[in-house]
Image (cartoon, rainbow, N blue to C red; front, top):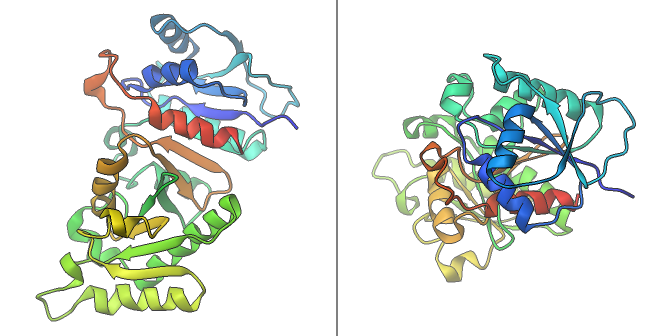
Length: 309
């Protein structure tokens, strides 16, 4: 059975994505056909700039029974001069995913501040709302160790207001389900405390009131969880090798140490969606555009992951 195509939305126009894309395709042979949602004009100019050669075929009818092959690159053309270019790209992507043509989706880096206009915390929430998915999770995945923040791109002063026992349990459920379905085992999960050393000088300690009861409930539900652990020691070598996933209370609590350990050897997977949505684990990095020094490893890992699905 031939693999379904990988749908790739190339993301923001001022981004390192094209550089890492063509580096990835030169370094790694992907069996799945590739369909790009992009401007054909820009895509061709970038191909020329990065000395990448492959036959392009325009594609528009997502309901057709077309036979794809990986000897071509397929493009769904979107006019980049359109003021709503990215909105249009996502609209097309959602139509393709709903059509059943594929269940494999990568979006390139996007400047969230410019695109989301503060309506959504991130692309994870933007896509989830469109597909009416209320329970999602952001898993930063590496084969050795993954991390998941209970809250994503939330300002730090709002974190304690957002976290509940129920929310923690929902994230654990999604992680456990993902590992069982895709890797065939129940993951061992470490959960960090909300406060330094899981302690508080205040009368009310969130770790006793929220985190610990959530962990107790998760154990009763059959999940392999332990904690709460102090976030400043859980990532030490002898600690992290005991777990498959570390769940933290907020974004930088787990992503800062994780990226120090694995740098670009990771992918961002959205759990809870009716399809695979992956993005490289970095942003558009406008400062590095045209410097030809960007590392393609995260995109290579994303392509490798979806190529097997």
